[in-house]
Image 1 (cartoon, rainbow, N blue to C red):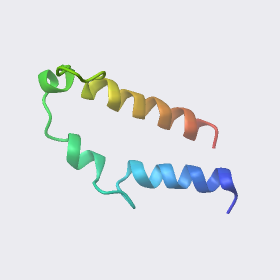
Image 2: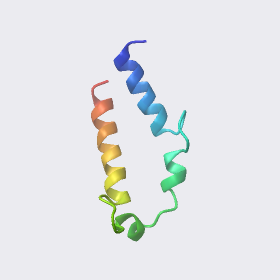
Image 3: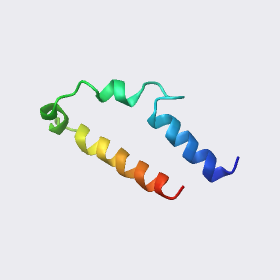
Image 4: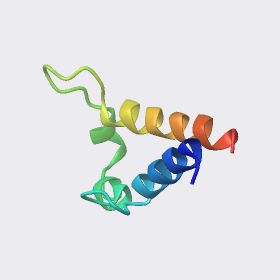
Length: 65
């Protein structure tokens, strides 16, 4: 398997919870809209911002495939 293909497959597996500690859908599934927008003290990004960065990265990585 080519390095680029391997990296993409690894990232895709992680997004689906394969080979990672938890499935992202299980972690984020029960959050409400108020909670995800909160920015706790000492934390640079809200859950909303982090998840959207993950979505953007996935779109960039997999649009090239």
